[in-house]
Structures are given as structure tokens and as C-alpha cells.
Length: 167
Image 1: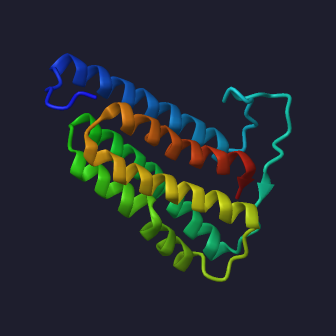
Image 2: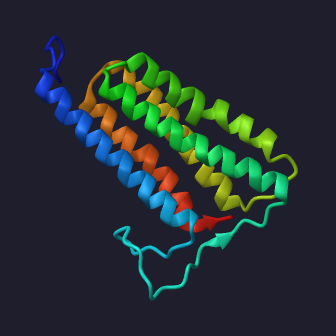
């Protein structure tokens, strides 16, 4: 742990570059999932596999609400990465809680009122929101060796759901 040590600008740039690369990869994978491209286990599009994800048969309103929530999740990940790159830990923690944690879950439920989801979807959604809450709790430590693995778990929870379901 680097308690009491100040990060050098070179280290900040290196971390910022790594976070930016992580964000770009997340956006590319999400875009491929959204377009229905089958993905290999390594995250590479494949032309030979069928897209075997489960379709969430939502009504038009619930589908629009779900898409809005997913875009907001991507924007939140981007904002968290940007805030961490600026070492604005307070902002990063606030976004993790407000935009990815349980407050966002409650907002999404209101948007998707009346929609029926499989039990596995609910489990994956709760795992995602809990991972985000855990991220929000670790960010104030300012310890990137603790923060980045939790950020990875949060993004991984998103990917886990997108691997199973599609609209």
C-alpha cells in the first residue's frame, strides 16, 4: 500500500492510459454484443458461432428503458475511469454508487415496470449492483491496487449478463 506516498505524474499518466484502454475495450465489446455479433470466450467476434444468448422479450417501453439504462451504465463506467484518471476519488465513488449501484437499480425497475425477467437475470443484475457498491466503498482508499480489481469485477458483472441476454 502506498500510504503517505504521492503518485508521480508518469505513474498517473500510465494508470490513466491503462484505464482508457480498459474503457475502450469495454465499449467495443458492448457494441459487438448490442449488434448481436457472436463472441468467442476471448471476446473476439466469430463468424461461425450462433448467437445463443437469451432474448429478453420486453415490451417497447421496457425495452427503451433497458437500453437507456445500459447506455447510462456505459457513461458511468466512462465517468468513473475519467475521475480515477484525474484522481478525483470522491467523484468516482459517487458515480459508482449513484449510477451503477442500487439507486440506479431502483430507477431501472421503475422504467421497466411490468416487465418480466428470468430469475438468472435478476441474480446477474444484483451481482452487478453489489459489485458497484463494493467499488464505491473501496474508491475512497485511493489505493489503485484495491480499486482496479473491484472496477474489473464491476465491468465483469456487466459482461456476464451481456453474455447471457440480449434485447
